[in-house]
Length: 178
Image (cartoon, rainbow, N blue to C red; front, side):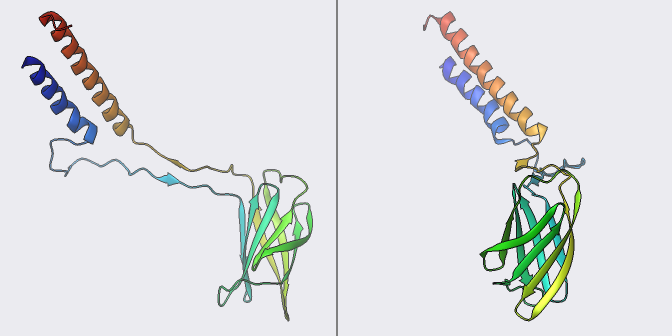
């Protein structure tokens, strides 16, 4: 019977800690901790727009991917001639999908702010766009900032459970159960 009480006491102590709860009604009057902020991956990109076109250029390894849309309708621009110049680049980007053009790079771009001039010819419409591709910032991968209180709660819960288990083993040995 004593062992059952010890086990119940250990569970009663550990369960609220595991749940991350406290004895309050959920309202605190102290300053609350900031919520964890998810960080998403962000590859270097450049953005430009004119009356006719808008584009987003994204550096993906050794490929510069350029998405071209009509400014007024956001419709992908298919079968266009997309020429890119700047940052040591000069050439045509090939169409991978409607509105998506890819230019293969000979080498990776060094960390810097690269000025790009992008010429777009689609049907009877032609335009020249300027954009800046910033490769100076490192690419950040997906991560979530963890609150130190959550980790502390899990550590305390684990320690309480271990202590309750050790207490149970000690009592059994004293009672001659093992």
